[in-house]
Image 1: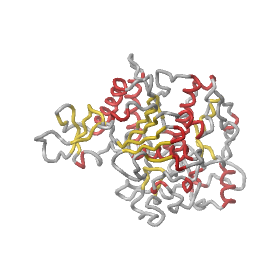
Image 2: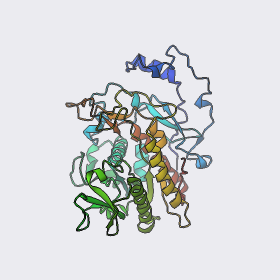
Image 3: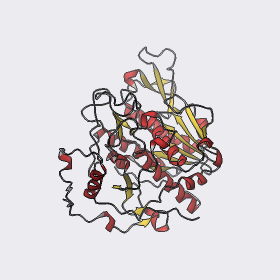
Image 4: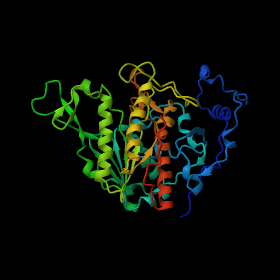
Length: 430
């Protein structure tokens, strides 16, 4: 098979050069912020380290790239991005269309993920669609999973001339919903599907006779009812995490259940761990590893400052990534470690549960600039009130496109070598 072109020819542009060009093109740069003092817009840079372009990288799709950790890298400016424009994609929820909703800057669309030791293949929608011919690609999880699913819809649709050949099989519109959506690419006889299951495990009524404060329970030993629809997918991508907090569970009367017993004293963290263990067992027992390739995407950090989504937290002034250490809350890394420990245990077990990890947590932690912030209410209603910001979901085009570029690279790797590795390609870094 001929390999798609890699991105090795796009050298990392010095950051000061990025902003010289950005200013010349009319992009907005906050001129009074201390964060920009190190950017010498006169053409000099305060950094004395060697350029990332000095590193000799191999092609990820080559034999030499087999050991490359694609999740260890940097965000680099790339003038060829974004991969699509939101105005050209009819398959986007209105809330993700930040530019159309009035966001004034475009910086967040111009960053490409560059692994340190290898080059990723340039995304090619036609190549990906050929790999998906006669197949089902299924996303399962919360609304951040829907964010990624819609990103991939647009990335693939950009390669299809006749947009009428792409449609939702039940005639359902793309918008917030409580079920599932299945989009078919008619010319390739493939589907791109999203199933809403924010906890992955089953949420249902509590046992008869439960205390009055228990409104619902999460059955930690049972998968979501829709799991029967997922198991025969060809590519299956899980995510969970954003609903595993006190606000979304116990505060709202949702407690944790195992068997017929409600565990009133169980913590959210312990319940989250049990849900991941149940998911891993389900993959091992119910999924045909010879047909279905499973990915688990790790948690994408939020970037609220000065509060959370209910208490006036904000991110609307962020226009640049953290190019050094990220400043996400400590609980993000606690959650990451919890999930990493479970996934590592199952991937290293003697029975060897087969799955791969899209380990996006660390790379995404730096992208405080990529959220919807004030620009999620549609072109007529945006911007939102300053105290009602969304620093969880992502503008499209934007950060989720990079997650899908990693997915694309891993899918191509599979077809080049004809088989996925039986063990995870991910090593927990905690």
